[in-house]
Length: 320
Image (cartoon, rainbow, N blue to C red; front, side):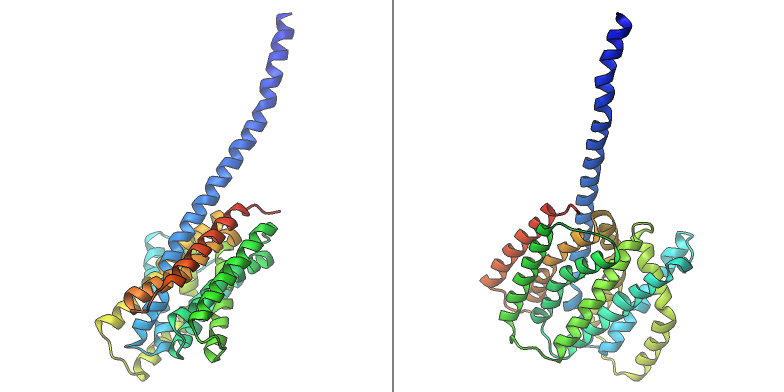
């Protein structure tokens, strides 16, 4: 009888084990997703100063030199980090294609197109339209390239956030499309591709190595172009332009990608990427502080709307 009682007592305990393990696994997954969102937020905070810093840099340097030269400075830092870690300077050949897309997207495309748009007369506020639409574009590429399938609530919140930012920024600007808008759309698509490919690679490779490999891979193009531009274009370096160039080279082009790619890998490219919805408003805050642009009640209203949309994307984080 004791043997039978013992057997009966053991079965329910054994039956509860797997369920407890599943719950613990889900809790770990949720913690990983929230950590991913936090890291992505650090990346967004880093990137939010890019547009104002670019404006400062172009006050002393040619826009092409700012766009390409920043990658050269960041590549030097990348080589030092890779050597210090004992890692190879080039990525595995099997991953060459996604790294080329990262180069075209965030090393060359976004800095060049966004810088030219600003140089063409687009204000920081108007350029925020692109940043506001970037989360939606990143989520779309995540579906196409990373196999993610967010819930309908996620897409609804994403669309609402993008609409809020678009309406806000357009009502602050001219409301008309211009040549600068074409450049901003190209910058948008470039960043979305680069973010998606980098987030995919960061699932297996640390984020700092992902951006380092992309910078080194681009060096055979960026270094000679930078040398030619430095010789042939006028320069009027000042504390303002040098500080702006230093920011886009060290923070926007390298340091910001470390938490950003790690966050996309941990939290999911589509979900963590929605933290970018806060970036346009952060851009406007820096523009107010550094470029003395006026910020009124409409900005506060838009900020609250964006925060609600970001919270909704977190609620719809689960994929189907």
